[in-house]
Image (cartoon, rainbow, N blue to C red; front, side):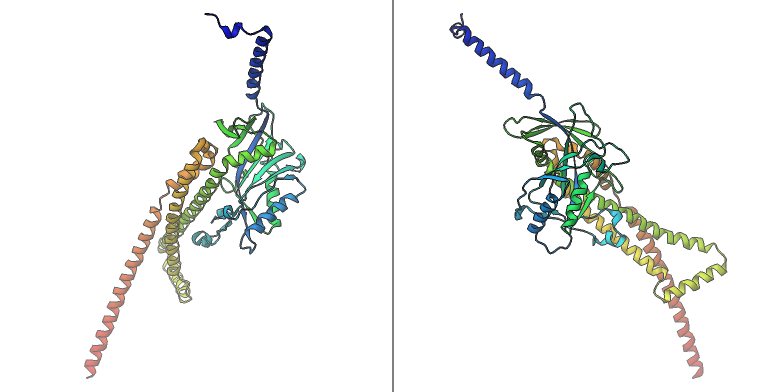
Length: 422
């Protein structure tokens, strides 16, 4: 059968159809090529407003203005304050910044301010003026685009299409800018790295971003991961600031939940470390007592006189033992309470991160803490306390028995003396 529609077309019409097909094929091939390429980093950077009397609106406006007034910032997008979406929550500083009393009581907690709408800004800093990480002189560019909401910071910069891994030092200058902005408002910046002492302030997973033209609106897809880099296919028209903002919007929810989960994990691990030290100190007292028992009578007598003097002043070993036992019980109770909060936050994070497969962004920074908290067992501390308490109770019973016997003998002697006198 003859195709009537085909035979009825003139040669000019056929050529026009074929030309249209070739144009569509060319457009399809072009659309599969990225229109720009970036690297990106993200991390947790708390805006701690302390006990300031300023309203949340004032802080929001001041932090935007402080970033805008920085000479290194070339552009700042508008950021609208919305009271209902501006939040604070309880957080803890790195353990190295806290003493034992603060760890056990939680008195060192602070309340970071999470802005209702993030601040997006562009940065231009000469390469020679940027900080380097681990002495790696590898700053790749003088221009960055960043988005920060008082909790999560996202930084991107342009790369060559063939580049596979970002330089270590890239993007860290943005931390200096938001730290300076926080200090200008009377607040402070608290960086939550993967672990104490880590010089990398961002997550250990970096992003290798290919920007494509939009198809039915902005979208993002994670296309696989390398040891420390996740490939991101981002469909978004517009300039680098649009790319940074869209990337932030696609990851800010799991980033926020991860920040809370990480914070609880580190605090639990810090308290557990202090708990082990408390138990060591308690057991060391028993070891010291055994060591003294092997010394001569003069050394033992000298120690007893010294101990009696401290007991008279209310500073005896018994008081120290009671303080250690009390601190151990408090530490165990605090760990159990925070672990309940941790389990709830772990569920929230999992729900947010598994959507669209975003959990791959956090696995390097999450796994060690998760294993440590999940496997944590405070039974060793409980056993040490119960053993020490049992010894103290036995000693009290012995001394009470001796005291009762002595008192009974004294009463008997007194009664005999009175009866003989009569």
